[in-house]
Image (cartoon, helix red, strand yellow):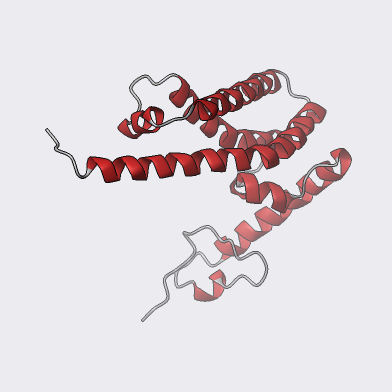
Length: 192
């Protein structure tokens, strides 16, 4: 049985890449090129990281999936990283907005809202408010580029995220628990 060609997949091997060895097509250079692109991105970031005392590339990558930036080249690497960082925050901002102001949301949102305790509603409002402030900061950064301000945003957002992600996880675990409880109750009832 032939190994599946991995050239059309994103190489995440870092060191000791085996993708090239398994390649059965005419694109053997793709995996090593992707690896070179990531190494180049990391080198560019390392210069900015040292200048502004930012988190490491691997830390940002673990939290915000910035390795996807390896696929494109840019003269403004710090801006691209800031955008990738905020992409994750933006997803939570949208989710908390849907919980705070449900207008045609998916049905599961109503189940969550029905079972939400007041302290959880307050936590959602607080997170939403903080993420909204970040959105305004991002709009300012998108309006006028300033490397120092971009770096400052990355640094403060990374630190804030380390605190907020645990609060968010607790909320999501409560949502999951309430959904499971509601599904168990609903499955015993009559539909129609």
